[in-house]
Image (tube, rainbow over all chains, first blue to last red; front, top):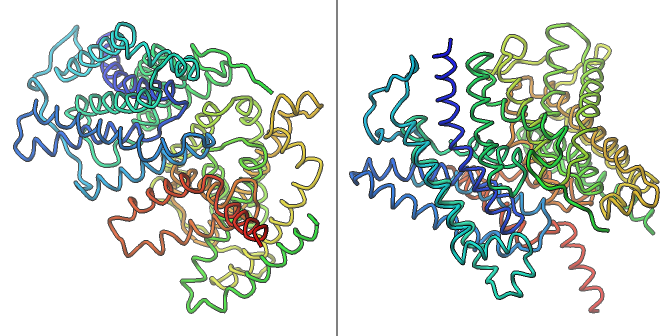
Amino acid sequence: MFAELLQYLFAGLTSGAIYALAGLGFAIIYNASHVINFAQGEFIMIGGMATSMMVAAGLPLPLAIALAVVVTMMVGVALEKFAIEPARNSDVVTIIIITIGASIFLRGLAQVVWDKEFHSLPAFSGETPINVAGATLMPQSIWVVGISVLVIVALWWFFNRTLFGKAMLATSFNRLAAQLMGIGVKKVLMVSFALSALLGAVGGIVVTPITFTNYEAGIMLGLKGFSAAVLGGLGNGLGAIVGGLVVGIAEALASGYLSSAYKDAVAFVIILFVLFFLPNGLFGKKGTDRV
Amino acid sequence: MWKTARIGGLAALATILALAPLGFPNAYFYDVAVKALFNAVVCVGLNLLIGYAGQISLGHAGFFALGAYGSAILTSTYKVAPLPAMLISAAAVGLLAYLVGRPILKLKGHYLAMATLGIGIIIHIVLKTEARITGGPDGMSVDPFSLMGFTMMGDRMWYWAAAGLLVLTVWLSLNLIDSPVGRALRAVHGSEVGAEVVGVDTSSYKVMVFVVSAVFASLVGSLFAHKDGFITPDIGSFFRSVEFVVMVVLGGMASTFGSVIGAVILTLLPQVLTFVEDYEAMVLGGIMMGMMIFLPKGLLPAVVSQFRKRGAAR
């Protein structure tokens, strides 16, 4: 009974960590530019696919990971430079369509450059399950959660302890004021896309040994990351992490106790329910309208 | 002047629809044309919501799919005649849109996008999972549309029906836009708070137009099911919802004829792009991005303003 629950919690924490990283990616870009980047899921896919392709080509795993992260970040920067930057002053709907167009483009690209098959990676440290109070824990799950925590701590340090991180925070609070203080707002925008791509790539790489990946793997992961970000309140980093974990754990519990067929629907049911009562998410600030 | 422009536009649309079949060498062209017209009807409805009321929906394919499956299930499992089946489905979809629309249309911007996206995805997953009723991912077959002993058969007949439906929808939409309701909607788009201050009941207008656009999608979904004879849950996928929005925005937001043009272009695009085979997704994504970057106001408004500029220069 307890072992079963623990088992579901392990599964929920593992996928929740990935949703949290994706949600943070949405939050960082949203803060820098008020853009919702629907191609966030494709960063996750590119990270996983690039690594597994390079490992298959004979590269050692650490090198493949490093290269895949760099490739994904370059894709993120290119996306900002060539698709978001030229449309800076467009409507919300227009920019949503641009990023959705980008996600379709990147999926198409992955399909052409690589293939349509499923790919995997070897687990980072063996596949011997660890027994915890009757539940089995895969070593890779520890990697997923551990690396996610590391990345989140590093991000916290970046935003609160480095000058550029603080400049990015300042820009998210008041863009114009930040610009007047001499902050290069364009650079902030570019770095925000690079960081989000990094988060996506890391998530995609650590989870690939468990879930496998293919060119379409980013769609659902991205949409669930978006629900994690909205659940926590758009632009709230901590909210996105909590949102990701809530979505991941709820999903695991629902598929364990209720029906595994509706696993993918759980995130969206939760988000609708929360938005019915809290229109700005769990921790979102209430906005004011100007006429 | 506005009135003559409206009648002129309708007449032009009717003429084009009447003459277009002269250029159709075979049934395949009729088939694609019917798809384009169906999409156009959905988009004219959706444009009321996106273009005029300024509210986004990333879940309209869900309503389309519910209409299709409602008709399919009622006619095949419960032996209801197609017309009442279509109306019952549309009424049910309208009720659903009303119930979910009331709380979610209070949301703004990205939160609304998320909520509508969620509704669409939940509908898609339900259709895929409840295999006993819907046939699951394999889909289900649907009987042809018949009314009082007369059965709709063949792409030609469907073309004329769809063309008639489109003209009717455009006429309804133009009238709605030019009515007090339309002015209220535009006020909501301009500034919601401002509209409220001058006495517009913004939330009920938003819900109304959401319901109207959902019912349009449902009706077309029903017709599509009867016409195609076979439906799968993927007609309600997130990608289809996105496609509808792109059609509206591509043609030009807040332009009824723009929505028609957007729907036609985006329906034809994959047919034209088959020669690029594996590169289709890349080209489609690239075109979506390029159009929105270079013509953020949409095709028709861009063309119209070009003409105006030239006229002024002369």
